[in-house]
Length: 144
Image (cartoon, rainbow, N blue to C red; front, side, top):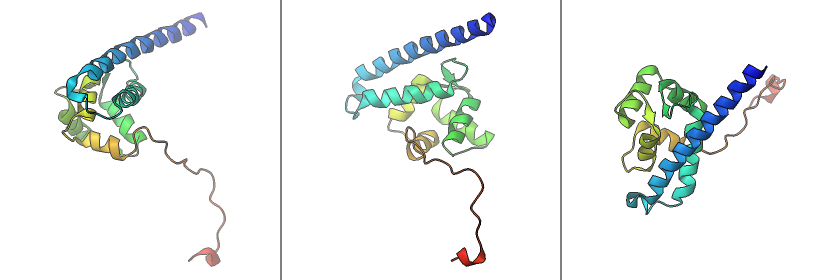
């Protein structure tokens, strides 16, 4: 039990360290004159940080193809492996998306597939709850 608890503490410490790193990057963007005309930049950066951390499950500071896949699936925009690779190539030069690359994409003028999906699929918006359970019984008389 103690070993299991130790692992949770280590992960918590990693998440705190990750949040501090992302906060420092947010501060850089807040002080960058390139983005000074951006409306409500501080709250946008906070939202982007939260979403990025949600899908950076290995706390590496980068979104790999699986993190990107989970993000898009959660937003209801599942993509094939080839589509994910194309999205990665639009946003980053490597196999992962760093937080800086993510912010440049979201705040930049150039549109990428990922930016469009995140903007129009409701990043940060609460989705309507999915109705689960058995459908109610219907008869032919209920049909229009």
